[in-house]
Length: 134
Image 1 (cartoon, rainbow, N blue to C red):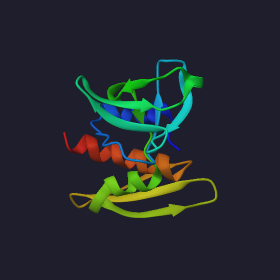
Image 2 (image 1 turned 180 degrees about the horizontal axis):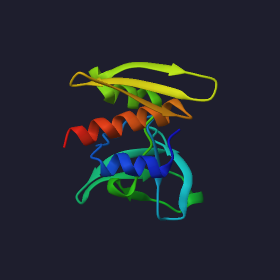
Image 3 (image 1 turned 45 degrees about the vertical axis):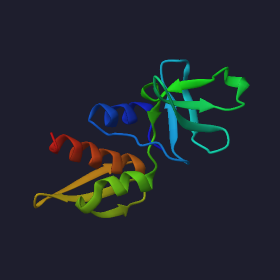
Image 4 (image 1 turned 120 degrees about the vertical axis):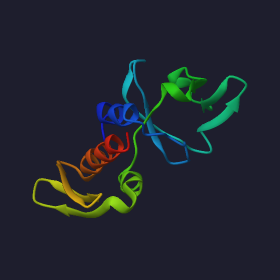
């Protein structure tokens, strides 16, 4: 899983979250940075209120949360979601004993992004893609 710092970089680079069941997220700056939440149709779901979209925590009294504005949450995309966002630029994922390498092609330029996990390598490739889109 990518960490909060890398997820924040993706958000700042322009990654847009369209919440769906099964998505993981964090709530930074509320002393919950280390907690990972998962959207579920039963306990944590997104709904519309007059002020905008919120994430509702149904029956989770242990966190003393009723709901959180969607902008306060930080999406932690899964490996498959990161790969999908690379779209047609993605060419390959290769694993070595200690690293993962994601290979992409953008405008004819081949690039390689190496990290200790596949998700981190995909995220690095996506950061590059988002920067190129500016």
